[in-house]
Picture (cartoon, rainbow, N blue to C red):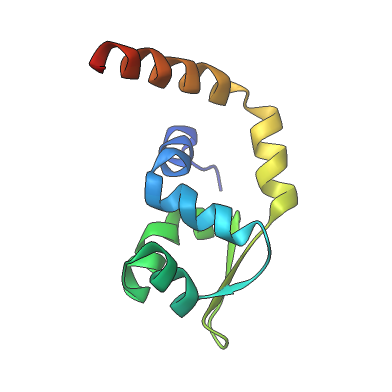
Length: 99
């Protein structure tokens, strides 16, 4: 199943999703921990991470109600799609115009 590259990139740059992914870089975290950390509900955590779960970047353990990141897959995606540099440059440029 092919995944929407733009949707993945969009997800990675969402401030809440990127915060959740950053928390998961250190290892498995409970839904409760993530919700508390990001000041959102557990349901919002699931909703926010849903597409990345579908793509296999994030793993959800239903029994334990916990999330973990597939660091290998995330790193491989970033290495293969160097569009992050151009996206960051564009965002920085936009920000400089706004300030």
